[in-house]
Image 1 (cartoon, rainbow, N blue to C red):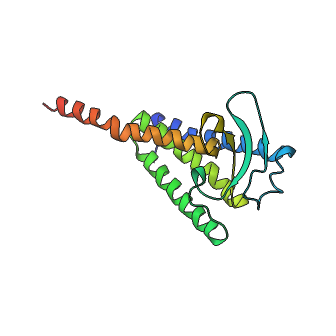
Image 2: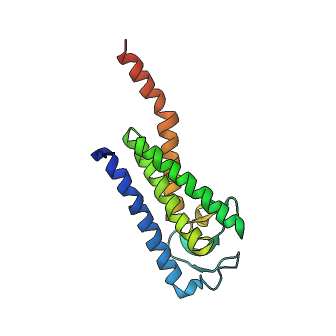
Length: 176
């Protein structure tokens, strides 16, 4: 299978997202104020650094999926990892077949974010979350991978539901 240039950039977005996610998590894990590895078994906040503005750094371990859904430990950790991997590879397959820049962008972000969180799940049994926007009334602590998945999901929704009607109307008018 030969990839066209329009298919390459979304594939490059995957490692870019994973690298951005893992580098920021490495910075958090390496900061002694968070005691992150010492509190791996703790379900509470490992530490917090207040920074000017509406976002703080708050280290928590997330044993679920994005934004803490489906918390799991033990054998279920591996079941959740397999489910996450299957979903990521399913979206990757869709990306390889996808037409349209917005759809490719959305899928690249979702796949990159999924692999970023999957790395943590396999390494630690939990995902490193640290972006705290509670001052903006956002109740969850999240990470770069979660943000990529969320932005990708919004773009995917826009492409599939909001823009698909326009594409169908345009195609219908061209066939007349």
